[in-house]
Image (cartoon, rainbow, N blue to C red):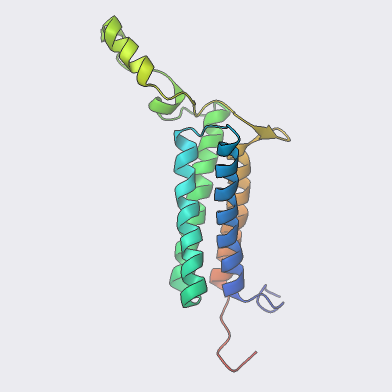
Length: 168
């Protein structure tokens, strides 16, 4: 028995997934308003959620179709991948972008003034630092979990069928 046969049409599932992305965006902006400045990877993770939310608006206005659902799935999978990557950077499993995780290449060949300029231009928020966590899971980790759930919703929507008008 699939989600559609239980009364959940693919359009509704897709709109729920898109609303989930919008909610994650609102939460990220809320944390930012509370003083948690985002790092470079945090900002990057917002873009796929914006795309998924906009796809939801298109589905709401134009109706569900497989192409839009596939784009929503791609956006959610991208968000999941970026969040997993960021979580790995925080856990020191791999290195993040140089501009975001510290480290300056070519430091031995820099003058003191050049080094000072690089330090002053460096971002204040490091991608490798956990700014907030709940139950031992960072914001990036929660984003990965939520994005994976949203990916599953988009996939469920994509696998469903819209009823033909005039039928159940």
